[in-house]
Length: 476
Ligand code: GLN
Image (cartoon, rainbow, N blue to C red):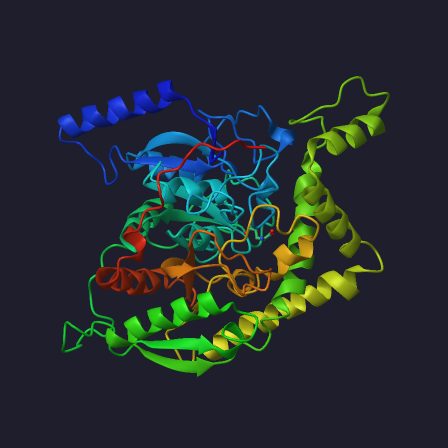
């Protein structure tokens, strides 16, 4: 599947032996000996950290990202690094300098992105857990496309120290695993205040596993209706004409299941949903253009051979090191931040961001969480959007709003679709591909999302389905 970019069996086996010894001594920590692999935008001392870019082809970090370190301190054994879109820019993993990742459910389909390697590796059973990062949907959408569970926490919950920056006001790391229960264990270990991240929230540590089996309302009478009292908001904007039939059917069926558990669905409005796309695709490239200015061929990363002068060094190092999508975003970002355009684009996008956040505040007066599809379609075929980057941007419509508002979002598998009637052309004869449902909560309500997903997974088995054994494919 081309999911892994760096494996070092000697490192992994040494960590595993240390975990075995601790277990034998009766000193096992919360996640002792459980394997995990990390998205390659999280820096690691023991493995190369490329961010999916030629720019960082052989980059070795002198330190571990805080989330990587916290999982290690909880006892986890590192398997290596996972492929992703270059600097996490993309929705298909096709923007990786190291080739596309294949979706284990349909090897001709994308796994989603940018955490495509993480999602594919977990779905195929190569690792029980992976880290992902989510700027505009990069945990939730690949989790949906590969039929696994993932959660992007509230902005500020998980430290960004050592997360190679794409758009700093949006980037968050989170866990990707089979079940909500596994995600809760992982998230508890990952989160926590970090003085090395200026936007880290200074909160007491939270055990996200503690309340998974509890009823939503503390005095709910019947154990067969544990979600009694839970109001699920269904935004009109998430169930409109742009959503493929197979996705709508699976999401509606999942909502029926949640209703049988006692939840009640209410209609809500998120009127600025459509504007989230242009706002995000101004703000994220603006921040990216600034963040990526550090890759200059001088301090670290790719350096061109025999530059004629300093300007030539910058130019050619960046021209050679960055891929096409990264260059596109640097150009857009530099443009919207430039004198004369700043007010018209960047400032206006920031105002739209506030409107999107206000929409959620208003909706959460009527409901406890919001549910809808993660993406308008199931995973599309590799290469389907090759000549049309905007098609990828548009497909982010349901994940971008929570990112702009900094809210937690969870993705869980709720069925399968055929890809027919997807809006991207009919693909009959393809293997079934997973459909994901998204749960969005008010700030800091990760526990609520995980509890609802866990209770759904107690009465359904979508999260237990496994793709066919992968055959090997030629990767590009
Ligand atoms: N698809 C979005 C983008 O390309 C989101 C990526 C992400 O969350 N890292 O920017």
